[in-house]
Length: 397
Ligand SMILES: [Zn+2]
Image (cartoon, rainbow, N blue to C red):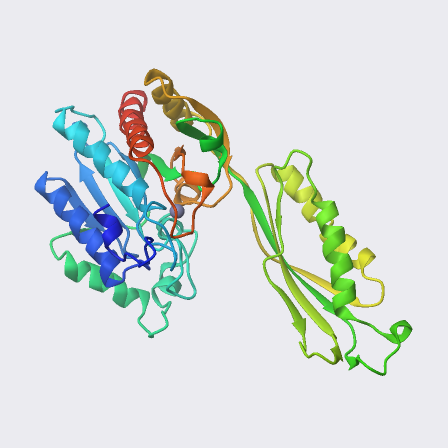
């Protein structure tokens, strides 16, 4: 609740874009909590912040946990920051209990996960693991022409005593706690979601090209109305992606009719397609049919389909999800295995070390919304699972 005051909105949500003064204040407070316990604090070139409790074995890689502190402009109090605080809490209770671990334990704030302030944008975790060139990302600017490089320097200036972390420095394992952002755990009265995968996604853009014409003088038989064909195409796509099991996610989020004048038959329609599914084969099979289905459904207009982004499903298997399940079981929490519908930092971290996620129920599945809510008890169980998972991994790794 203390963190929710930083960037608080009148409607009870949070507006805290990456590395703005309020977001930097989150980093400063957590750095100071860490320093009070003599945990090391480091910041890397992209503004990711690491708080480390040392381990007994020299050279052992860190077992880490964390998430992001930035929010959507009309975001909630829990998306991201609850995962960061679970990690900090886990390190603190392990410290209070005087438990010596072989590996260092780390709490991480990944920079810029929501990516709303800078353009071009990318997740701090993606930059850390090397999937995006750092120089391009540091040159990104916000609406006031502040570069990411300057914003990271502002963070450094606010915590001048922090050490420097090398991008891509190895980690032994990573666990991210996050609110579910969906309705399932609450509906099934479960405490914990053991995340099995982050589902894959394909983004496509469709153009329907017809001819502009006079709305009063052009007979229907002579029209090449882009809107009429676009409606048929959209219906055919809905049919293609209809899934009786309700696992496939299909969204047309943008739909633009041009020229957008009352008395002109539309000559052009542009729309976007966002499809997601945990199974890569399903995503490939159905995604590959989009162009043919669009062309078939359009009767008089030309259709162009371009794929703008494709990311395979990221499975979480092995040690980390096993440890999350063991921790949940031993605590007597009601849990189930489930894929994540949204993308998260753990997707990228899994490229450099065994990774996984734990989901905590959120009220009515509402997220990216100022009314986002989660109970203290549920969040505490999530943090407990993080703490237990860190210790189980310390034994098994
Ligand atoms: Zn998030």
